[in-house]
Length: 316
Length: 316
Image (cartoon, each protein chain N blue to C red):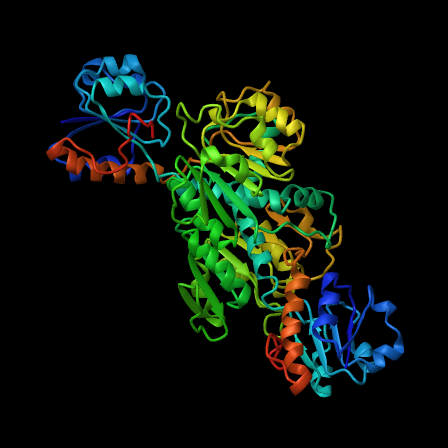
């Protein structure tokens, strides 16, 4: 059994070799370092690199399982994986803590007007009268009720917020006070002070949010996108933020990434932009490798996986 | 029974009059509006204004109870209240939510380097590699284990942090994984990634934190003061921040308030300063009035109080 990783895994490399002495591991810093003969032979691939496309899969005829260390798998040639019966696991859950922390960093930055605080400090202004907004008794609505929004909703509950979750069928999910079907969202969006997109990219979610969705939100709603940029076009975002259909937005993901310096989003004064970083975390590789180890233990005997397997039909 | 408030209470004024038809209420916008004859007659005073000093109390010979709407009571002439047997209640608990929200706004601002994010946005830099620090598995230490730190520690636990609390005797308190006596702090401070002061001002806490306390902390510790500025001198703070005994500080309270524009704190690059605002909240008056109502119901019959009574010996 040959396992190839298209990134170095630090201390985890030795740990893997020790736990699985009968498995051959090859770790490369970049996809470009991978020799063609190794690519041909490998059984299992660890990566989350954009280089893993249709041609890459074609050159790996022995590949049986891709352990994708990111959560979003939209860059992979899913149809080809399905045809080839290649199993796919993702990093679901690995980024839940990081994304939840960033979410509250964004919310508190906005609710406490930290930029105003910096500016007052810079100008040596002592303004004792300032009252920040409070999270208590506000309503936060999540598009998506998977592992990440569940974790975020757990934190929101402790802050005293009401949590609403939208998913395909409207089924109940832990940590959400109320859940509704995404298709019914127009009637629910107007309840929310904060709307957070954490949906994965699928055929269904591409361009899901339209101008009318933002019209349905409160005038002072905050929109935060930590999921995938494809859920709403840049054109729509610029329009609704310019027209102030909502108060402000925090965006970490974009229709086109990397965001180009000439993006019209840079011209708005009611948006905070980060660079698809809210999932980054120093311990992500360790967490994802722990999932990989549990899967590999089973896979060695049964060619099946027990954790984080992606349904190639659904796309998540 | 005459109850005087040195601030307007909005809708709460009517609510008080309706709930207590036999009590006379007088509401003034500023202490200066209070007629001397009313001051002479009043039985109960609602305020948190600095004008309530020894002379003010002397001019109110009939005063039996001060309902102080702030938590810190250090500006009041406590000895005189004791001599006169004037009861004192404070706003303990009213500010717990606000302070906890600000605490996490500060921590996440620092851990996620939001200033860097703003600066990148301004320069149209798309830096996908940036990894923020994570709260998970860090240790937060609170000087004080009262209502405010208990609420903050509850939130810290949900973020996956370890919580340590310091109080007079080291007794256990809910939401703290470990508690120690303040006098033993030198051995505990070095465990903390984040040190938060929430102690009230008393004789004991004035100047409590000295240079050696900051030397005992981790080099990359974050110090946050939301309690009272008197716990550490400005001189000490400037020294330890200049010498980088700790990484950075977020300060909302100061030895001398308001902070003057020539304060040396303004010259430091590893400090964030706010203007004693972390307790401010739009719903504070309502919350404090709810406590007042419960106390007044009892006080009308028994001249005793059931909630938030301050021990004038301890000073909190």
